[in-house]
Amino acid sequence: WYQRRVRVLRLVVPVLIGVLRTRAHALSMTEITQLTQSYPAEMKEMFAGQPQLKQQLETAIRSAAAETARHAPSQQSLTSSAGNVSAAPKIALKMDFSNFT
Image (cartoon, rainbow, N blue to C red; front, side, top):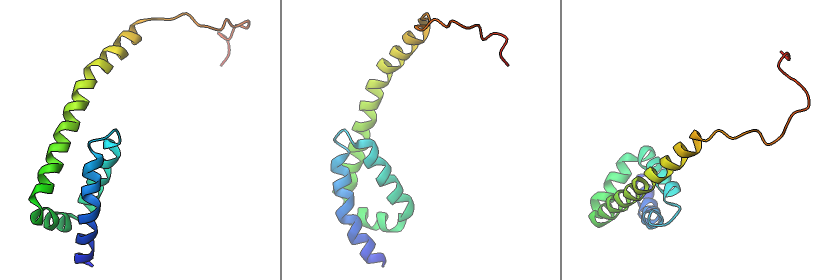
């Protein structure tokens, strides 16, 4: 079973690494993390046999992290500026609910 899993991982992990470079990188990263946690010995053997694949994974992870970090400050500024604006309610209530418990 061990060798069969290693062969399957040799097929699946390169595809997931390729997906890391697309918009679905979060899903791909989740799958790679789950595979690594489920089959640590098999993943080590696979990466030991294919060091270029390990390097591709590391590069893809670094670029995905850099892309996320690049977009994070702009998203934080949008949320903080939106949180400072207090908008009036759009629907005026006809009934007083202050005594309602």
